[in-house]
Length: 473
Image (cartoon, rainbow, N blue to C red):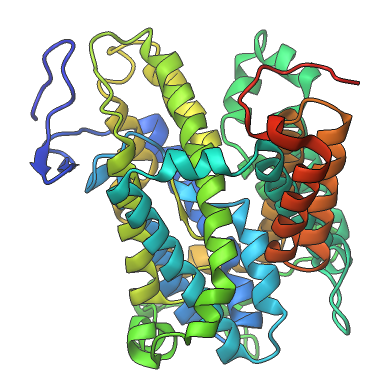
């Protein structure tokens, strides 16, 4: 094992602006993170599978293959590229991309549109990383418009879950008790101020909350069958013949063989052709909105690590915004070219996991030798073993619609409080709400254009000036 001298950056293999750290050579195992990640990261990654089957025409095997590839690319951020963050989806952008994709009635048009978004997001990150114009672009977008974009993402997420599409039952209609229980428990553990005070006294509660959405998700797995909303018949059929009740489970039933070839042939732009110019033009506002959201995540992740690093002078964290831009560009481009329409997008940060890993790392080298050990272990060293195990997949499969609904509802809640915390007075709040409503009702393009016009008319030049919060009411 390669060891680090006090005060140095953890060793690795430099390649260009990146650093490769080989598991078990540069980084060892952190068992608490490994156990949590095996369960939480696996179940979370599968949440989008039902929608890919229902709305993008994938088979179960194709959708699992997509989940495996996106998980490996997410894991590549710290392992292959050397980013010191716990990466994840660009979750606030998910409802924006998904909503505009589902406005198209044909599956092929949805696929091509999302492919255009993902490829353009990759190009935006590479362009801003190479040119260094990212900070200038963010300064040109007023804070109130940035807040309106995030608020629009939250509104779109909640609207999509609470209001069913024409002729379809919503997930909340199909799984009301399971979803409400999962959401309620998750809100209490993640956002409740009274529970936050209790965590300081009850370590078991703090440990439970550190699992993120997993406790709520597993509660739905237990309660769902009792209330008749979830059935594990598929898991039973894997072990027994439903006609005779005889044991039929064999070695071949242990493994699932994902359909990587079918996924590539049917969904990669390399196989089906690049999207047309009109789709790239339609995707441009979404790509720029995704960039704004990602930079907010990057600021959050940097703040979390700088706070924790004050207690760990033995390890220097290698922050490099340019490297992160290139990493995000490569990950999103590779995602589109290998697996097609990944509407959650590859993002820089999984905030809940970053907080958990950084907190244990801050306790000292005796608890976690290197930050990268905690991150690598949480992502199971980039090896998605869970997704090849058929019994585990069949156990999780009936609850995946609940997991996806839980993800979107929590995204809506989190986007709302983040957006509103960015605003300083009643005029800004009014403008942001109008932007959010326009995004939800029409499109990201309409919302941003309306927001810019209102910002100029109602706030004037001061909207572009960085300032401390102040009450003009």
